[in-house]
Image (cartoon, rainbow, N blue to C red):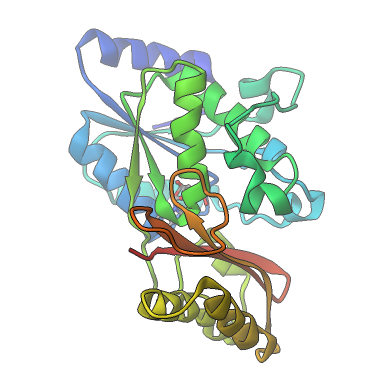
Length: 281
Ligand code: AMP
């Protein structure tokens, strides 16, 4: 069932809640792939119903051209969701249904998480993410909300948001789903030519390499290896490579005992921006 208006969805949700049923929520920007389906299947396993939002949120895009080019495949998305077993409600609003007349971000202080990596390269991005998640969580009142580790920084922002906004939703992180080649599944992959799909595998290859040598090499040396590999690839352009503490996402200059790290890459493949990451220890 597709809902375009939150007041109609709210009535359904109220009736679900009256029966003491639980709601698992998966926020997406649509153009669904197997990675999204894994999150939605988990939401169905752990809750009585799943709500999937399909909304390309304008306030989290810093570049209008990127927003415009973001793939939109509503009919195919609805067909894909029909293949899942269990009650899935789709919420596909227009911006005005969520935001009213004022499609702008609220300003958030996520304790510094928002200034790292994606926040550094996409100004205002996490204000947009926080704003839309807050609006969606208030419209849907989910018991659980499922986020992919593919957007690890976003997952940590969601954890911080429920704390700041005092929301009762429990955030659940889910592993990254990959193509057989290792490339992380992404809606943006639909914009890549067959050649670029092949070349983009370097992103995951380098993350695996960094994981392999993390115990032996310094972070400086690992950075040199990754930067060199991207310099030598004429199809990809590295935006950042970072090793960061998984809790505060601060860039790590050197390894310290007792801290968990992940490696993060953002790179352009023919103008399409891709991100990926890996747990290191
Ligand atoms: P998006 O539609 O790209 O905003 O993604 C919606 C949700 O799906 C986010 O929580 C993403 O982290 C998650 N997601 C996207 N791609 C993957 C993937 N390859 N593996 C796991 N989760 C993913």
